[in-house]
Amino acid sequence: MTDDTEVQVEVQLSTDSPSGHRRDERAETESDCTERLQSDGRRGHLMCAPEVEEPLTLLADVALAPPCGDHAACSCDCEACSYVEVRGMEGSLQSMQLLLQFLMRKADDLQDYLVNGGHVEREALTTTVPSFLYTCQPFFNHLESIARSTVTQHSGLPFDIYTRRVQLLDFSQQLCDRLEQLVLTCANYNLLCLDETEPNSVSHFCIGQSQLGRLRLTTFLYCKPTAYLARVDTGQHKRMRWNVDRLRDEQQQTDEEQGGESEEREAETVGNTEYYFLCCEDVPNTHAEAGVDSPQGNTGRMWSIGQWVQVNPDPDTEDINDWIMCEVPQASYQRLLLLGSSEPSSCSATDLLLQLLLSQQARERR
Image (cartoon, rainbow, N blue to C red; front, side, top):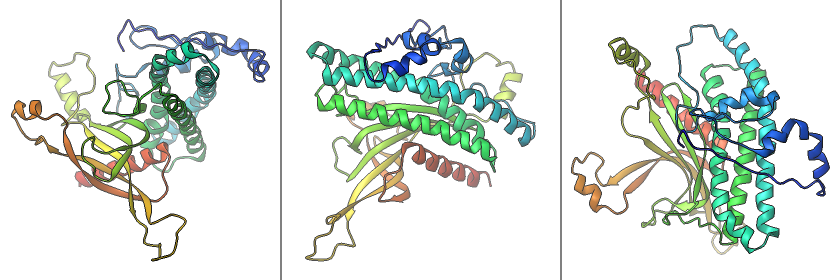
């Protein structure tokens, strides 16, 4: 996204439809929202009705800056911080719910064009749907930023903050599930490709970025379980991916700025990006008895969270030719957390990974 980028989404609402009259009741509040969703300058402010414009200006940061803004050391007590968070969340909940309804209706409209439209309308969705997925990223980023990056820094959350956090993550989960359904439906009509080896595939999409301390997490959802490696059958199939960046220590950055390097810049990372996955694999069903049919069959699906450990090219190599000659990087899957047979929601899986990363970080500091 560049400074000149402008994203505009038009929504056609039919008042003759069963939901048309209900939509008219909120026409004054949402008219501007349903007419356009456009970026404004470098921070890409979303233009909307005055009642919700201020909270929506926080939906600017997709890639231009960390989604939580610049982090400063907090010297206030947790009670004061909690009060500010509650007030901030109360203002955001109504605005986020309004925007969620708008995006969900837009997804419904696109699927309606897919199912009931003609050939021309369907072909147009090959570019419209990927663009819509990108348009939803600021919404995901904002929800993740508030729900994870702010309140999770305090232990022992007050009940009202915890409740609002759950609501915000539920908004994210609702839109995530709806977009996944939309992409899968388009794939069933052969309008979108889910094979990640194809250049124009929509095998996965971004569902938010958040920052907690020195950890910056960018989350992606695969629309269906996808082979862990493109050319080697490892038995693992990935469902989610997290790109984890470890940011520079704030004290180190402060020292450099005092030494004359005070120009504005994005947070710098330490080391390479780490990749974590939510994967599933089929394992023998130990409960199945020989000669007896089991409802689950002879295999069962097990879920886990693990890390990408690169094997080829050697991650420590300094020979650029090793990378040039390697068509597809190969890696092993280092299982870190076994989750069992039930697939977790994307929000729950992200919570589990964050707990894992923070516990590792705490051990490293000892």
